[in-house]
Image 1 (cartoon, rainbow, N blue to C red):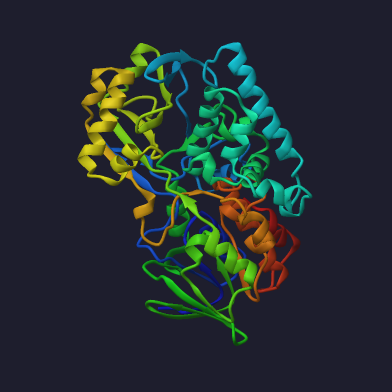
Image 2: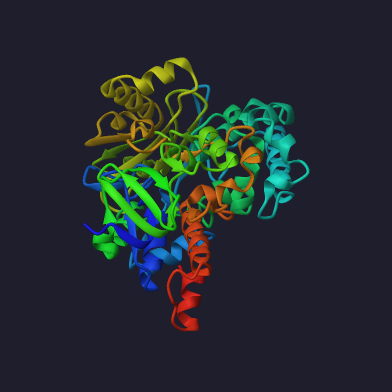
Length: 465
């Protein structure tokens, strides 16, 4: 087994594999170490009723140019998120149908939600720039939760409910768990709140055929034996002129190394010499939300026959959000996002699978009819149970961003940092993961790891994908 290279990448998620793919293409000798028995990180394909679904990251959209370019380069394709028909809002058990990206509300309630979204967008734009933690208001914003801001700046339960849904889908969290600064940084990185949460033309526009993890599978196939699975990194030693990576299966050496896992998961790796205090603080305070999903498959998408889109939003119960993620023809598949903020719901999340499945089917039947009680298949993913993974979606707690500063991206010696959490654009998304790979490849290129022949090849290193 080859155990030395010019660059070693720790983590075979989208960022790590993209880095290795770019380096390999420019003639740099690279090895990828992955703790799990699979590639993909927070991208995970599951099969339900013979249809591939995304247990983790799923959607891509037109504003996410970096990941779309990579998808095209790899010969993969996408299909649109089903959006035809009426969406459903369930408020205290009562159903209302609507179209568009926001639930139907009386004019005073629309005004309340509209002003809250406008104020969040305005505050996010003021943070524009590579160093939001340096903004004069950063500590004040980071010292409060999104939930506290929402309670002070909205007057209706419906407006608060909508923003809670945003927190659930984007962060797998309750607004009280999120830093206001962190939330605003994510809005700004996406170019606005509606772009972050919108359907057609925005972040929830499309899915990857074969599942989002197919991107990582294709990259790993091209890298071949350079990818070492079931090889968890235990320690990083920079006490000599080479970086030594100690793993459960042996030692690896390189001129440079890249840590391409989220900060919370990275905390399990020891370092000699120790990391700077800010980086240690980041790794020990950063967290990921669970983002638990369940997919339910039926012999056909029967809700479409009633002119329903399959999208639903509820202010109570276990199933807070549903999407029709099935193909245009064939079986019907509903993706459900599960809430766990009420004690009874938390017990269902942590309880036996059959009890949870029955509760989900009962809620789906109340929304879409009795046929929803009779699926042909069911699959779920609880990211808190995933080995070598602390969760699925970002959860920036109050105080984390200002205390970490540039520790997300600042290299430490010969160690560089990548991942969707480090991106300036589309932070926390697949597009952000690819952009973080571009940044790290440019950093490594600047270190002149290997000769790069010709201006064209050098441009490819820093701007490709």
